[in-house]
Amino acid sequence: MSTLKKLFPFSFGLSGDVIKLIISIIIYLVIGAVGGVIIGFLSGLAVIGWLFAIIGSLLGIYTLVGIVLAVLNFLKIV
Image (cartoon, rainbow, N blue to C red):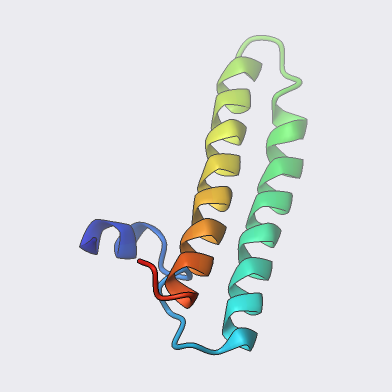
């Protein structure tokens, strides 16, 4: 559990406040959107575009897991 708290710091900083949950979700969405736009431009490169496509997929998974953990932590399931 301590490893998850280190990897997803915004997910476990909630103390039962809906505003903090919404801010955490917005932060994860902004990280995903900005990273997606940057990696989208870089994935068009011919030689190493596949590497940036993989990194973009991992970033999408990170944001999805972060949002799910934030909601589960808010509901006190995790």
